[in-house]
Length: 313
Image 1 (cartoon, rainbow, N blue to C red):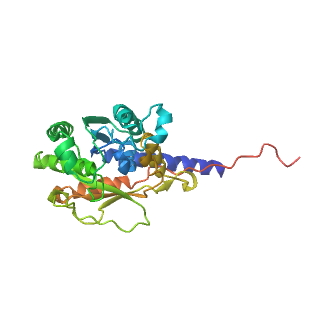
Image 2 (cartoon, rainbow, N blue to C red; image 1 turned 30 degrees about the vertical axis):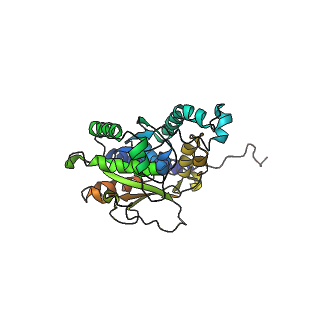
Image 3 (cartoon, one colour; image 1 turned 120 degrees about the vertical axis):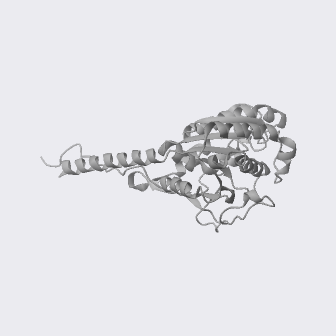
């Protein structure tokens, strides 16, 4: 009977692997994340991991600034890096190099394919998207480079942060740039663009109807259209969840104390489908998130360890 149980386990395991490989082959999307700072990708870290590692897709990061304004909360990182990062002059001089390296380390966990660093100035925290758009960033440079990246790589999807009123102005600016960029592409060759935010299952439902007077930010519906569950569990006795990946990824951004404080926060990665996509991309997007809901880890069974000595004499 034990031999039969082992044989059935192997059969089911191989069958699961075959199904997982077929699933991955059928859905291998190309995704570009357009973001303002290194560590913004943490919002959809599990989604990126599942696309790159489980669906064998391509995930690239388009990073507008180097995040040098993040020096204020780098207290614990000073001893780690041996640099007085909380001093503004010292922090701004060293953080671009440090944060790029941290992002690449985080990207190794997620399976990132390519990084496009645009090296725009990270001035300071603001809720006003016009500050980076009108002052800190050379928007023509950002637009030109983004158009090149989009044209050369033919992405299926663009991920951005949801431009909610209370979010960092640079996050909103990056999303506005991405929304405007897709209109420069041929109508029949535009990626689907989505805005994302994390939430906990106990939170009230987030409703988003668009930001300020920017018509391009209006979503198809005011609640999230698609979700990825970080709490989905697997492994032996279902003791492991995708929150492990989110925490691994956050841990690499050691210079950013506030980011570190989000460990274990966020049960869901919610995505809004912007109305500017039209309805043509809905089926493709549904297919992506249907594939992402698939659990590729086949349960394994283990025999109890045999005692070293028999009780019988």
